[in-house]
Length: 257
Image (cartoon, rainbow, N blue to C red; front, side, top):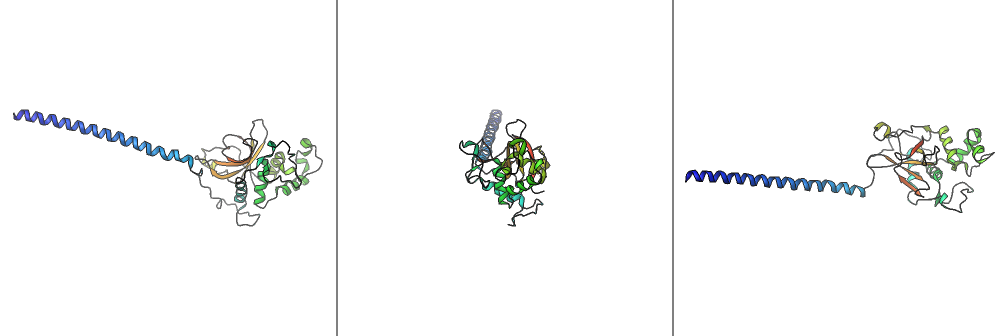
């Protein structure tokens, strides 16, 4: 009887051990499932959070110029001037069939713009009149610009010259700091060389010519890539988007030198 009782106890002990193992396995499985759900939830919510995952301190870039003497450095001022235009995005002029794209005084109506107008308006916020600056540079260096070749102009026209991307390219090459056009988000040093307020030219159509220009924003993607503020026929209004990795970069400048 005692021998039987001992066998019985061992049998029950083994059954209890087996049940405990099963219970522990179930608990671990449930915990893993719950952990995954808790982990995935914030990831999904990230789409609803602001896309600013790399903080860029524009007050500590070593840039001290302040053309409009407002206490904000030129680089930050230019960026803020571009961001201001996102509040009421201007429609792209070339989507308006009856617009001549020529305005006395230069600047189009507030609700209209092309890519060059975004730059000019941002610079004006920083105390720089691109209209005057480009006019003066063309007047003194007429042969350096393609006015005669492209538009058959014999003299400068301050109402339109600064709004033509071909002229802007030459102006920035001559008067701004020329920077790298190779963008590499995986290289921290390269990534940090693309500062908000920088002017970037693009070949959107991949045909070998610059046809868009924008200003780098201080908003970034979740990968830390700075977005660009620009106005183009697609999407048709002023926008802030991640295009540094998607489009061909043809120029990268920082003004003033």
